[in-house]
Every structure is written in structure tokens, then in C-alpha cells.
Length: 279
Image 1 (tube, rainbow, N blue to C red):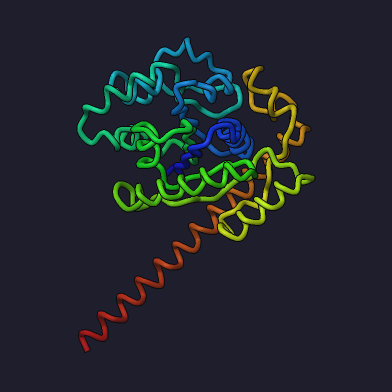
Image 2 (tube, rainbow, N blue to C red):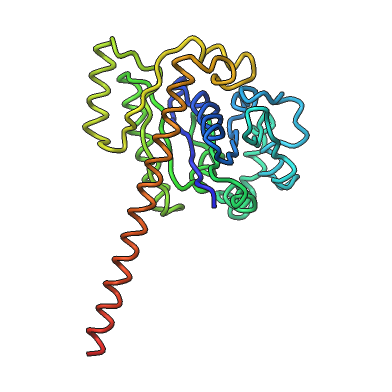
């Protein structure tokens, strides 16, 4: 069953889509089956994956509005992952699904139909909290937060954490923060170091050790419709995202092991209590 990760930040311009596209490609290089879901009406993740957003036979908007099955809207790209693409039709889809029953869970139910076909499903969210983004949070197991090391980003991060907590308490009790990824990182900047230290203090092991540097090739790759590792595989951006993908996989594996061990302990404790009660 797929690990479903919403990639989100309510502040724009933090390399959220860049992270979604390049993480998808990196996980695919590491032999994982990946689906990238573009939940932004701008369709940047779709275009960045080499899919013309205005030529989609079916988009994520068609899936959410019930006009097409999800399997018909998914397509494979040259970077060896699959994409559920988006375009400006998604902006109108929100009005359609607002009238539907269980409107917050439409994406969750659609992804459930294909989850067994993938190891990872990455959802690129728009930089706003709307019904479409709520659908992403209700479908996801966890949230990955890319952020730039600046003080305005810290303020936005606090708002996002509150949003995730509200969703966890009301709609998706399984939702948590997978981690925070520092993007557009400039280790020479005192501000970057100060904000980074604050993140480390607040998030602890939720802060990924890998940082994504400012990199010209990362900025250029979307114009060519490909992840950076296919545009310039030796660039710092490509190497950083591949390193990040490996760290993310290791983190998830560790969390799954801890959960399994806790489950065994709880089962043993329950059996012990049952025996005590019978005695």
C-alpha cells in the first residue's frame, strides 16, 4: 500500500512544486513506484514532469468531479513515474465538489482505488487552504513541508502546523507532519543559519538533515519539462534531491519499525491484562 504524502506550505515561492517533481523523480530512480498528483490549478508540477497541461484528456478536476475514473487520468512520464495532471479546470472543480456528499474525502476515495499500485503517492498542494487542499490532507498519511529559511516563512509555518492539527482532530486522525525540508538554502547567510537553528530547536528530528541549495539548474529544469536529474544529473540540485529521497525512505522505514514494535508491545500488554483478569 502506498505511503501518501501531501507536499504543502501555505506560503508560496518555497520550492514546493520543485520538491514534488524532483522527489518523485528521485524516488523513481531508487526503484520506487511513484504517482505525483498535481493539486494546483496552475499545473506547474504537470508541466515540470513533461506533460502539456492543456492537452490532458482527463485531469484531476475530472476525477474529483466524478467525470472520469482515476485510472483513465493517470499517465506515465519519461522520468519513470506517473502523473495525475492538473490545469485551470481545477479552479472550477472546487465549486462542483462543494455540493457533493463527503466532499472532503473525494480524493482519498479516488486514490484508494490505485494505492496498491504504488509505493509512494505525492500530492503537490496549492499555496492556499481551500477545499482541494483539505482533500489532500484527508487523503494523506503525512505532510512534507518545504520551506525557505526566512522569518516570513516561519510565520507561515506556524499557521500551517495549526491547520494540520485541526485536520488531525476533525477529519483525518492519522495525519501528521513527516518533516520539514529546507529549500533554497544558502549556508553563507547569517539569516539562513538563524532560522535553521530555530527550526532545529522546534522540530528536532522532524527537520530533515538534507538541505536543498539554491541552484541555477533547479530553476532552469522546469522550462525544459523535466526534473533536474534528467536535465543536469551532476548538478547540486539533482544530487541534493536524490540524497533527500534516500533520507526520506530511511525515515519512513524507521517510523514503520517503531510503530510495529509499539503494536507488538501493546498486544503483549493486552494479553497480560486479560490473563490477570481471568486469574
